[in-house]
Length: 338
Image 1 (spheres, rainbow, N blue to C red):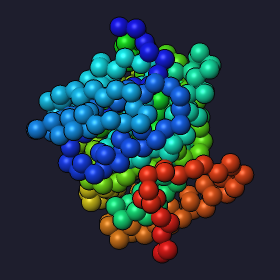
Image 2 (cartoon, helix red, strand yellow):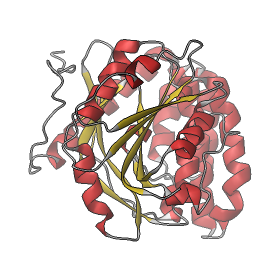
Image 3 (tube, rainbow, N blue to C red):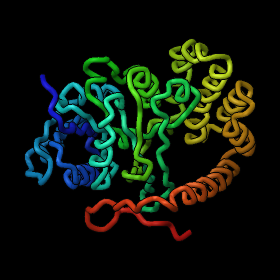
């Protein structure tokens, strides 16, 4: 199978909310790029509800392929999508997220460098009532394996475009045994084969509907030991400091999931372990103190932290060229007045 120079968009869904799925697809159909667009719908619903979208005529989407998914997990669904893709590039999408029209056009331009295999972008997180919860500017970590092991952020899946050859030729598949945080695991392995780049400005509105895998304490507590087992020796190869920062950042995976699930004693214990591994981990110190008082102090501390982060992001973005928002009727998001 030869690569088409276009983009295969892999969207995995269980079909719970067809309105969200349609909005996500519409944002693909609104892309300004001239590249050919192939939409791969990995359908894990019982009655294959996405077929109705495959039968529809779209303005910019050239073809739609529905792949039956036995619903064995997100990593397995994405692997099925990659296997079905035929284009040179693959973009991941989620069924409750919306792309800005220029997303793919701006990201594809960065692949002019043949060493670049992954391009991310900034993202806004949108609450269920349409409020902008946070706005994140992507920071390019240039495919630095050591930095990613230490906890450097790349971006959530709907912000990513990758070369399909990394899946077909290099064999960098999603780990189907990873309970959650599968993206970070994937980034570590991708970084050993290519460089990363990023468009800093937000080009995605990411929804927060439903239960995300990272909010499940049980999954998070099963994920971090697997991270340690897989990458502890790799982190140690970069030196003692890298090994300790890696372990500290991995313990924080359990902290985040435990806090989201209301397991504050577990979160406090893991934050302490993260702090012991790396006393300079200010996030670990933050959560260790915040979880001492349980839910109320965590809620207050997170609100204060978000205010500081938003002020910092606003300062960084003052000189940015404005980016157009999704042109899908009325903007689904709005700034909170609170």
